[in-house]
Every structure is written in C-alpha cells, then in structure tokens.
Image (cartoon, rainbow, N blue to C red):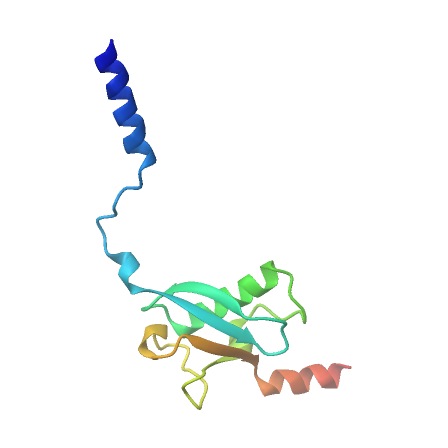
Length: 121
C-alpha cells in the first residue's frame, strides 16, 4: 500500500516538473524591440533568427492592433518599412531578421501612403 503511494508521488512530481525539449529550436530565438513611429511605447516580440523581415513586420502590426494602440494603423505590412537602429536604410522584406546584429527596430509607414491619406482629407 505504501509502495503505491510513493509511486503516485513520484509520478505526480514527474508530471509537474518541466521536461527538457529534445529539439534545439529555442536556440535561434530572439527577443526584439520594435518602436512604431507615433506610438506610446515599444513592442516586444520573440522571433526566430530565420524569420523574414516581412513576417516580423506582419507580426508587429498584428500585436499593435491586438493591444489597441493608437494611432490606428493598417494591417498590410507592404505599406510599412522596418529599420534596424544599426542600419541606415530600410530592411529588405525577404531578408532574415537574424542577419542584422541589432535587436532594436523602428517600424514606420511609407511616405506615399501618408500623401494618399492627406489627399483623401
């Protein structure tokens, strides 16, 4: 009877303890910060090193909208540009986000969209 109780304790402890994952997918994850121009604060995302810049832009816009931030932005990542703070020009959407040394980025709308929005007003 006591052996069964001890066995149950061992099993319950084993189910509580976290198990080590066998795959090494966690090794290539990055915590990045994306500042959205005009927003009150930065977004923080966990991404894979091999994620494309376009995927990071799309995820950033979804997180921005989900958290109800202002100003309201569109959801099409093609209307935006992502800059690395260490780079001087906009990042290519087909490049991998891990190819840049920095972890801080700035997301802003393309200028042609701002001109179109002003002409509608």
